Image (cartoon, rainbow, N blue to C red; front, side, top):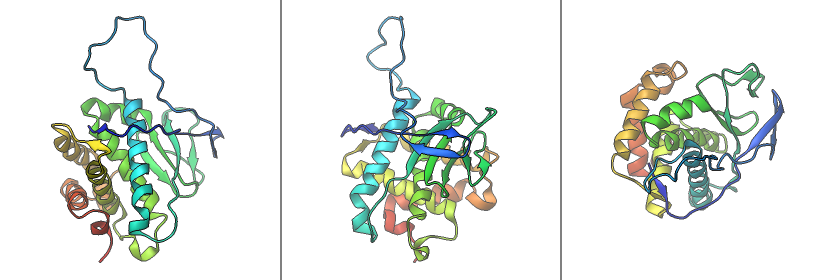
Length: 231
């Protein structure tokens, strides 16, 4: 999807020593290049999902840090990044005493962290790297909701998070941190449709159907963060 123009390194990671114990700094960034004995790759190659995840985390965090004071009172605090987990493993991280779901991405308000199933990210990334940016920006939207006064949080939490995702990704592009490539907007629309219709943990009753999610995301791209807040 988007290419980071202003390169930023961000240490993503909160690992856990136990199933319900998430601590900062236990996990190193998953950005090391793979070791291979194959010939050098061609000049134009697909970015690995870990690289896109690291870029998405960096961009979204920088956008909120840069613009928070323009939008809200108080000081911006970055959520912690638990990062990838295997939802099919015997032991998975927990949020509020419950194990994180398989093939899901989540913001955990109880411990203020973001996490995502590695299979979910890998599967979506194969269809296009816009998927990774959308998932990260959406879950970060929930972290933002958790930092706002209640009157600024919409009743339709998921649609507001979609709106905030659109505002952040297109706002970051306006800031020069992202450059959209040909086909990215189509990838984003397709990803929103898949997330609305094809995953067991995103039900239309609480997340909105595909048209509602695309509409909310589009509102954010056009009206910015303020367009995502209750009137």
